[in-house]
Length: 77
Image (tube, rainbow, N blue to C red; front, side, top):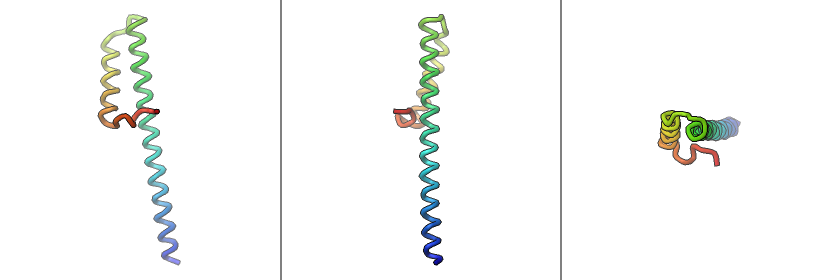
């Protein structure tokens, strides 16, 4: 009986770990999507509304840092 419970506990732990990994992936992709939206908004503001090039540069740097940390998988597909 103890062997069965140990296996069930291990399987439950694997499931929790997989769930946490998927959750982390989704959160990373959401953060990447938000950064891309901010970059697009900054660029649009710069091109059409007299926004500052500095805001666009800062948004692009944030996207580049995210890419350096998470790679292309850090953005939604």
